Length: 152
Image (cartoon, rainbow, N blue to C red; front, side, top):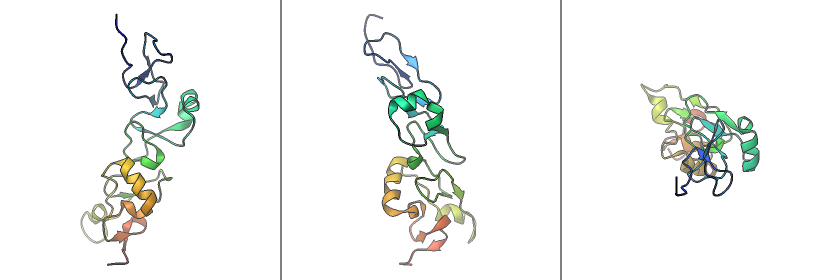
């Protein structure tokens, strides 16, 4: 073409002005206009932070498949895994999601364990401030949100 344009998301041009956009290596992705691919694509999460060049050179060392029942959109990290209602995890450094058991009535586990439906990145920040109870519905606390909060 006669005009330059940014590379689409999921592709990159290693050098400014490069005429061809190259697909990111699996399982990496990149933002629109990226000069490297250093985030994990949908259905994968970034296990640990590293220099973008390291991530690009060894993508499978850093990008891991999304754990069962978790939600991993583009650019998800271990700390920002999406946890659906009815599930709980011990901390932002855990990739293990636990289904909350339904003792106390039909769908009680889903009612107690609210997940982080407000969005994984926002919930992760709140989780770090509040502890693992961030996944619990108001009034519940502890592993699998099985305990009543002290004020109740």
